[in-house]
Amino acid sequence: MGGIFSKKEKAPKSAPVSDQDNAILALKTQRDKMKQMVKRKENCLEKERQLAKQLLKDGKKDRALLILKKKRYQENIIDQTLKHLSKIEQMVTDLEFAEVQQRVTEGLRQGNEALKRMNQLFDIDEIDKIMEETKEAAEYQAEISNMLSGQLSNADVSDVENELEELLAAQVPVDLPEVPDHEMPEKVAEKEKEKPRREKIALEA
Image 1 (cartoon, rainbow, N blue to C red):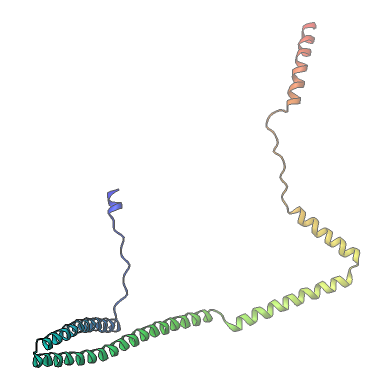
Image 2 (image 1 turned 30 degrees about the vertical axis):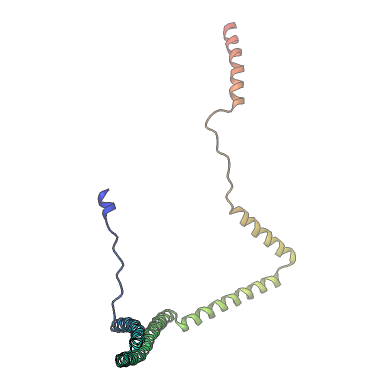
């Protein structure tokens, strides 16, 4: 019992990972990292903007200008990163679409090969021969039927049809009742009535 319940079902074998799958995975990983980087830099930009405002209030114009230059540099990096990210997104889409096309093409190829194998099982000449023989047999049967109909009267045709019905009826099995293996109740009663009479005759003798 314990062995039965402790036995683990085998997991289905996964499909082999292709180079195309690895390329898509690598691009998606790079894309996610770039998105995280852009998000971090955008958070820093807002902090630097607030810092520049505070420095201006404190009269530190030079430092505020430096912070804004740094902020602008980060914005340029974000713009370039977004452009690269857009290209990566398009490349991932193209690879996934190509993978779908490849699977569809492979499915069509397998279906075409299966159809060819099925067609090889059927010989066109053999099919034509069978159809011709079937047609000739039907024509021959119709010819014989027409010939016999011309030689027979309506009464003969009616008699033939009745005979056919009788033959069909004779083929139907008829369930007959089983013969009893004991005496009928009437026979037993008659024997009981005759028994005293036989005894009386024996006594008189």
